[in-house]
Length: 313
Length: 280
Image (cartoon, rainbow over all chains, first blue to last red; front, side, top):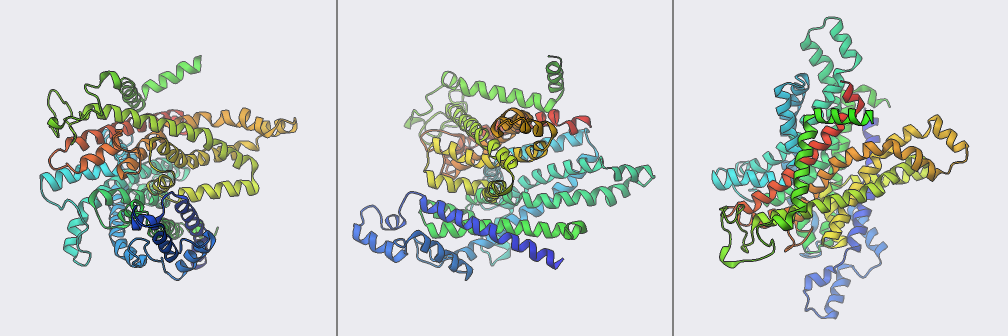
């Protein structure tokens, strides 16, 4: 198991490296000079040049790339091109807001989505199934930012139950949770739609398997068939798919953070983007990719725990 | 002819796809006829009619510049639909080719192409879309390109697996032994096999493309105001959510309806065409 875990983590490293390279290149070829942006349109040419030197922008691309890479290995994300603050600090401040949001999204999605998906598959073509299918398709179709706005309109503006914007005080649990409810619910509802759908179809596929038919044929109680045969196997598929949807989740968290003005990674990314803060932008992109890659590794490991066959492959 | 009629019957029996197709058709008609049915000029400002709630003369109300929201939703819907369709077409033009070439060529070419696509897909859509938009700069043409770039890996991956399954079948091998060129084999023998699936899937991905366009415009990197798209209208309306929620509400409803329609249609079509599901 440890060998499997190590192998899986090692495979993640080149992916991260390529991601870093791609984001580095994309951001560098983007138009707009960060030194110019920082000094404004009326700055003299000489002062822009001086700032470029100070920011290391005059060095060849390859050197800049290697510096970024070696810095990253030391856990140093460099300094913000705009505020000159170390980015690592900004990242650490933003990360908890994004983490709690995505985690609540996944939990919400799993707790409601899995049972609904299973029940809907078992009651295929009944009214319950139709309702669940329609709702989950609706959940897939509604953009996260629109759902967030709807919830905000009803619960914050009309009913005045929750705060409209902000992330609350991260060190104060009550204020923090109070600010998390609506964004968490938004992301959670979207995730529920995805999880319900994939659970339903994976249970439907399992229902057709020979071993389920055999279990029924030998007279096993339906409850046992469901828990011992169906559930476990369907769970396998769902676990691996949660990894796939990690990407949907992270993308969704960006949109939800923007709607609710939560000071997380998504807002940091958009802020950096608007101000052409290359170094911050790159750090956030890399963090996002690392986030996705680690969720994938975690789900693979969970998969290996549930299914011993995977470990020995 | 027989099979055509059978397919129509199956289609009509599938409620999901009929509902999806009806709403999609309605949206298409509305989008095309937008210039004629819009009650006002979607760009015309009127300072005396700012932020008026829905009423008889402005069914969806007006925005902060006094522009008619209904007219803007129609125009914005037209643009969103156009962006979605063109980017999907671009995706279809390039994606399946890449996937088929990768599968057919095998070896290092396949590894290189598929690995590259994996990396592209390891970014969340919104994040990668934003990255591409930074490089290209805002504007409708660039949004189309950005969404196409996001769609290409999906189409490539989708066509990769079936090509792998087909390429070693006897009839391909015999075509190759007859000296038929690889290009011809891909176009004449492999492409027709994945064509149907691509078409069905592209309906679903049109829904994704429309949602992505809305997301990018909402983030402020997409099509820029004053040109309306459903996404940038929702964004503009957020500032007035407490006093004039109709601006965001109606434009968002447009996005939801369009995405839902194409999801329903695609879902239904997939149920019909997937023989495994059909048999059940």
